[in-house]
Image 1 (cartoon, rainbow, N blue to C red):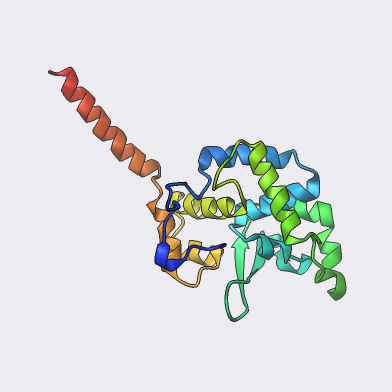
Image 2: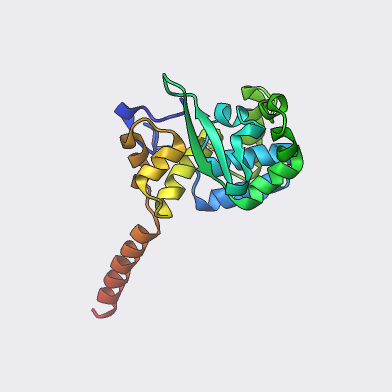
Amino acid sequence: MSEFNDEHLSLYTARGERKYINQAERERVLAVMERLERERALFSLLLLWTGGRVSEVLNVRASSFQIERNIVALRTLKRRKPHVREVPIAPGLIEGIDRQFNLRELQRDPETANQRLWPWSRVTAWRYVKGAMLEAGVVGRPACPRGLRHGFGVGTLQASVPLNMVQKWMGHARISTTAIYADASGDEEAAFAARFWRGVEDGHANE
């Protein structure tokens, strides 16, 4: 399942396995992705930086990009009615995709503008991404494209992106689905805990 079931919202499985990649794992995955063959690398990076599902990123075409605005449009496939969301991406990533596929040239012709950039099957794309994650040392439940998606949700909220904006970027129908990512322990929470530890240590030192 690509999205949390609202009846069982959790960042962990029933057996206590974490579902998302953390910041250290993301950095290792990024390092591996940058070394991949270029088309695989760009697909994987677009998946990681948009929080998109594999099927949604596979559906991307040249017409999906607003190059000057650094925006990609993803069609949300988990809704009953067609829904397209705009997600901002880094200028360097969109420049890399433009260089690889010549987006501007493709956009000039309605036919080429609407052809998929990555003609792979969902299974093939999933295998490429999972392979990169395993090479990066990510194992267990997070070692799959959904681990990237859930990591995107956690990371954006920890970076203080507003909840409603993360909901839009991830294509969630309900904000309650997005809110679960706020349960992950972030830097601010760790800072509070560190104050507590220091207080306990200081108390022991004065005994």
